[in-house]
Every structure is written in C-alpha cells, then in structure tokens.
Image 1 (cartoon, helix red, strand yellow):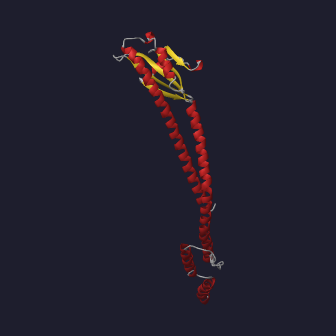
Image 2: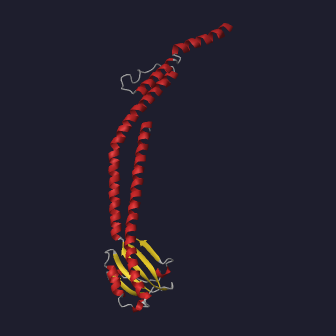
Image 3: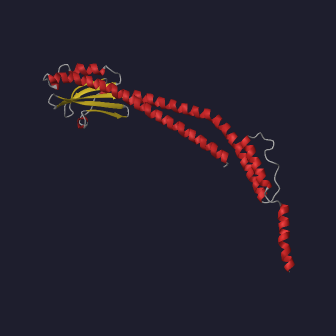
Length: 260
C-alpha cells in the first residue's frame, strides 16, 4: 500500500472515529437529560403527595384512617400522563391505598420496596421508573411510604428516534467529508509521486545506470518541490558514472600486471 493511500485511510478513520464519538456522547447526554426530566417530574409529585399525607399524620391520624387518602392519590395521578400508579404502603410493604390508570398498572408486592436503604429513591428499569419516599412522623418513626410508578416508554421512544437522527447526521457528515478527502488524497499522491520517482532515479544513479528523463520538468511544482529536485540533481551529478568506474578498474589492474 502506498504512503498516500495509508495517509488517506488514516485521515478517514480519524474523522469517522471523531464523528462516532461525538454521536455517542450526544446520545448519552440526551439520555441523561430525559432521565433528569422524568426524575424531576416524579420528585415533584412525590413530594407534594408526601406533604399532604404528612399533614394528616401530624394531626395524629393513621394512614388506614385517612378518608381523603384515595382522592389525594387520584389528584396526583392526573398531574402527568407519564404517571401510571401512585400507592401508599405501610412500613412492611403492604398496600394501603392505590391509584392506577389501569389494572395492569397496579403496584405489586411492596416487600422489595420496603428494603430500600434511603428514605427517598428513584429506580429506572426498561420501560418503567419507580420513585418512593418513606413517611416519618415528628419523632422520626416510620409510618408508611409513598411509591410512584411512571412509564419510561415515551422517553425511550424519543431516545431511539434521536439516536437514529444522530447517526443519519453522522453519515451525512462523512458523506460531505469524502470529497474533501478525495482532493487531499490527490494532492498527497501527487507530492508522494515526486519522492517516489526521485528515489527510483537515485537507485539508478547508485547502480551506475543512466538517468531517466528528467522527472517533472513539465509539471507545475511548488517552490519547495523545485528546490528539492534541484538539490537532488546537484547530488546526482556528484555521483561517479560508468566511465569513472571503468577508468578506476583499469588503473587498479595495471600494477598487478606489472608485477607479473
């Protein structure tokens, strides 16, 4: 593979890698943005629900005895279309009240939820996000917990569409770069041709062979290339020729013949 081809291929790979890395970084940033927006929405609803319930707890009411608990959960469910379920559980994970958009959205067993190490958490899984908060009374004792489930399918659909558009943009960018790389390849190949032919002619000169037609006399060369060729010709003219070799050989043989 010629040097110009190697340089062109290396440039193409560098640009392709740069576009790919930029696309991946933009994808990760967009993914983080979508997760942040959903997390903030769920956090707001979770905090408002917890504050309403804690107001009743501060009055000495138990979660099981709150008559307006279901209406509170229904109002919070209507605050966002992404919210699929709002549930209140006791400290052991048993469901006390539950508001869901459909039967499929109802929260299941809360045993795993009750084992969360923090008082407030948000977990993401494929297609779904879960946020929860432990309810504590004025003495710091656990009185229950609020769990919100949201659908992440809309965010994942937006993310998939954005990824497709990003790769289309990257492919378009590579398509626009290819003609520029083609021009650079032609220029590099032309300059490399000067060095290649000078190297071949130098090999002929060292071997004592006659030079080819003076290279690039009719080409439109840059000033540096003209200086390079002039320097090469000056060096080549200083190399010994075939006639010099023949005379040297005859001189070296004459003393030996005299001794005989």
